[in-house]
Length: 284
Length: 92
Image (tube, rainbow over all chains, first blue to last red; front, side, top):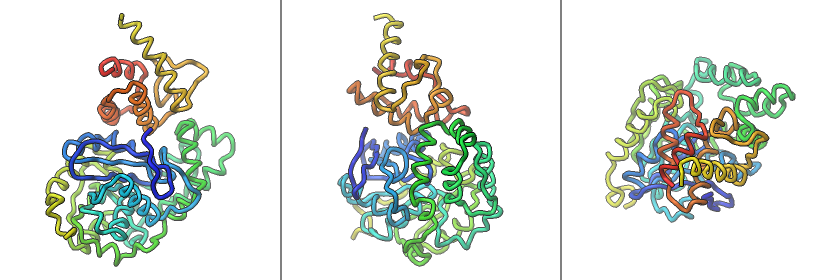
C-alpha cells in the first residue's frame, strides 16, 4: 500500500496522471475514497498530476493522539508536498479539507497556486451561520439515531459529542452502530474518537478572519445550492481578493457525493481557467 | 484455461488478498454472491486499499478507479464479489 512518511506520520497516499500538481483534501470523518467514488481523480488526471491522501486520524493514515487543528493538518500537507517533491500545487479541499487548504496557503503561500474550497465552514467565521436551521445536521442526527447514537439538535456540528457518545455506547447500541457502519468503519470511528480531533476542529489556531481574507491566490468558493453555509460562501467571495463563487445544483453540504458530475465539472473548469503554473504571478 | 477455472482461481486469490491486506477472513468463506459492504461490512476506503493490494500482487496496472467511479454512481452502493471477479478477468 502506498504510504509515505511526512511530518513524522505514515500517510496513505494515491497519485495519478501528469501535469501541474493538484492535491485533494477530504473532510472530517471521511477519507480519500470520496475522490475515487466521485470520479474526481480520473477526471483531473487527464490534465494534472493528482495526489490524494488520508488526513491524520482517517483512512489508512496514522492517528496520533493529539494535533488535529487546521494548522496541524496544514503542516502535514506541506510536509507531504516536500516528501513528494511538489514545489507548488493547486489544492481542492472539501469541508474541513478546504479549511486546511486555506491554512496551508496562509503558512506556506509560495507553495500554493490556487484553491478550490468545497463547502467549508471556518471556526473563525462560525458567527456567520445560524446552525439551528442546518438541515444537514438534522439528517446527520437522524442517521446517528438509526445507528443508536443520540445527538443534540442544537449543538453546532459537534463531533466531540458524537465521539463521546460512540465511545460510551452500551453493548447493544455498539452492536447496532457496528451493524450500521461495519466493523472496520466502527474501529476507525473509535480510533478518531480517541484523539483530540473533535475538540481541535473547533479551534481557529491562528486562522483568523483576517488571515482568511489575506489569501491572494485565485479561489473558487464552491458550495452546494442548498448548502447550510451559503453565508460563509458569500463572505469568502466578498472578502478574499480573488475569489469567485459557484453553486452546485442538487447538493447540500456533500457535493462530491450528492452531485459528483456537477462537482467535477466545476473543479475542472476552474482549474482550466487558471494561468499555467510557470506564468503564475504569485510565485514571482 | 476454461472460464470456470479462471474464476475459481481468481476467487481463491481474492480470499488471500482479503485475509492478508484487509484482515478479513469470515467464517463463511467469501463466495461470488458475497457483498463487499452489506456482507463483509467493509467501507469504500477498504475497496481502494483492496485495489492497491491486487495491483501490487499481480504486478499490473488495473483501472480500479473506473470500478470505484461506477460504484459511486450506483444508488445502492455495494459490490458483489462476482462483479469484482468479472472486472479482474477483463484486466488481468
